[in-house]
Length: 180
Image (cartoon, rainbow, N blue to C red; front, side):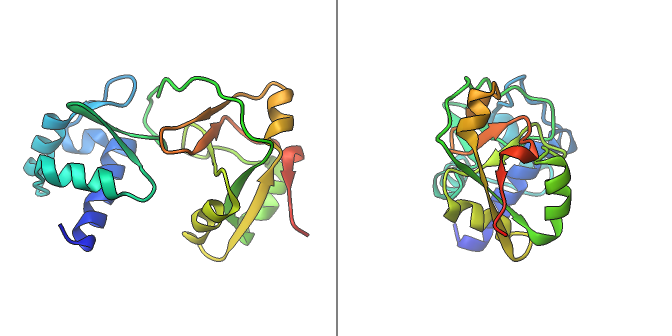
């Protein structure tokens, strides 16, 4: 499978496992899982035929590990806008986590902190490099440090997804460190 098709399938999976499963007739279970057979059948019916081996390849080579395969079922690791409960246990975060954004968003972030927007959680990275890549998807990146240790001590709950993305409901502005 060439790199271009791998990326196209990855984006297709993200759209339908995170945001619009109904668009191709999928029904996710409460934890976001769907049978691989159902996914492959739905993809074929909607003009995107894929074999199990190709699906396994896309899951294995995705640098962000966006998808999880568990036997005969698959789900997105995080980032859903549809109602799912990933069943992730609370986890103690490292002292600092990071969030990649762009300069145009900073005024709103200073005023309101980080909000999940259309997703279930705010996504945080374990290191500056990852946050830089995340922010760069929308323009010139700005990386904010999040005092996750203080948030945790103050009762905020964190979870870590299977692919290492840290999740929390929101980050109040007082826990953010802006480079001036």
